[in-house]
Image (spheres, rainbow, N blue to C red):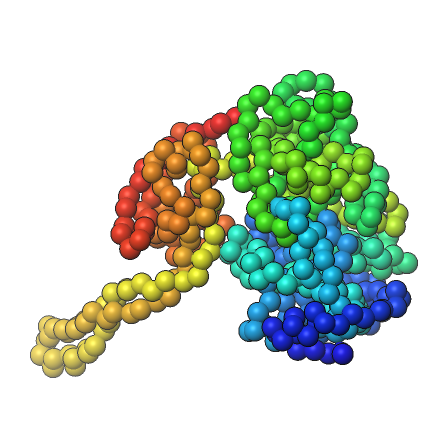
Length: 447
């Protein structure tokens, strides 16, 4: 059974069949024997999003160094894509200790700008509820990592929002006085670096961290009393993110600093995930946590998986403050709604009178236009937060923030409006069960 159209019938048929595949794989190559190729990306909530063609269909992928094989999800009948040579399997994802049903597929063509792989293995998650798109405000179809990094020297330029893949045989590193280079080790096809952290102004503690471009957060640490990795006294319980298994919760706090390649990031955000999540993440017994996009975006990076190095250079994001959710509101893009807009339209311009000083009369009429605009819905509300005390509820649709209509902005911009320094006043107009309500809240730091 090959070259199946991807729809619900595939799932029913595939559940009855099992295939045995060869372990041989074809790797990504740079087309036309070029020395390098450059791919622009979008930076959405600290995550790198790139276009990838899978079997001729253009999809959006998160570049995630925390995954070994590409994973597809959030596909429906509208996505006309075929997948080849399938067999049903189970995979385990963060957010739950239960396995997730999936399909393993071999022999798929993957193409990016200047990169091509004619025989790529991938996994397709069958759970239709797994969808990261609402949290990012754009459609995301999958994640890809190791297979794009393993055979190239990969530059990630967060300043210019571009990736550059270099042929290893012809690559020559540029001289860089302001660059730092540290060892990069691989374990189960995932990259790790050694760092130092200071918690509550105590001494520096060694931390072996996964370099995780698929995490939008700053730093995650696993509690470990023996290594003096403990949750600070000033902390609060919060939603940390979403994995293939569902929502992830834990405790948030602030580091005195993170020391990464000699660069100290003072006041870096840190999260301590719950015990179930920690157990699932501990495939590497040496691992103490991860460093994510909110830290990585402060550098321009060069990954060399085969050479075992990671090169750093600070960029313009380095000194930007870490963003904390002081409002307690988590929002998602939840479809569209209709709004009425009244505009004035020019209907007629009479001819000018022949008499000197003749007047021109201009006529306007009101025109009503119906427009579809995005809904931004409150999907999680931290107990005891300013938003909770103000009276907001999960399910509220945010219409305006400080008198600015939210439909004029994207999800990241609306989220940014809800953040800021302690003491910032925020006025919200929300819609609840068809009724519009106003709320005022003042941001408050819990750490």
